[in-house]
Image 1 (cartoon, rainbow, N blue to C red):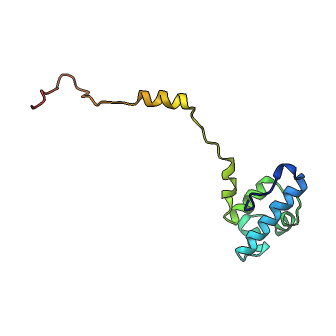
Image 2: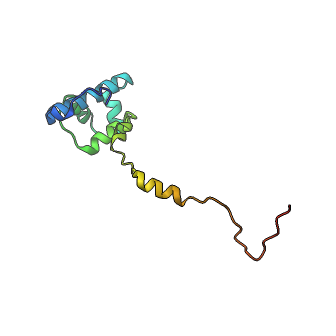
Image 3: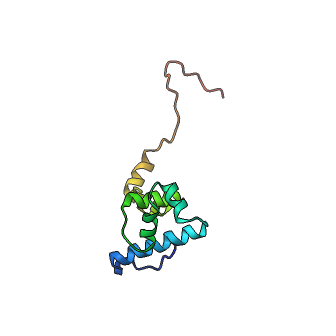
Amino acid sequence: MGNTNINWVSMSDKSIIETIGNYIKQQRLNQNKTQAQIAEHAGVNRWTISQIENGEAISLTSLIQILRALDLLHVFDTFKIETQISPLELAKLEKQKRQRARSKDKNNQTEPEW
């Protein structure tokens, strides 16, 4: 979320939920939208919006729907898995790169013009 100085590890589950709820509330207010508008767009009850904003737990599906309605799905970018290649594998791949081009039709080769 916006504040990168949060020590998530030292927080209780309840504190994390409250932090997420505060984030959602602040983003909703920044967009000048009511709980009812977000609930309608997300396909959830207004009570669900109120619940998360007040630090109560909601389902992951509801959270995704709310973040989608607020156009905030980018917060899940942290979960993106990127495969990293080891330096040895990279060196092997570099070694396998083609160095020259050659004609596929060996019977139809022409003499180079000098």
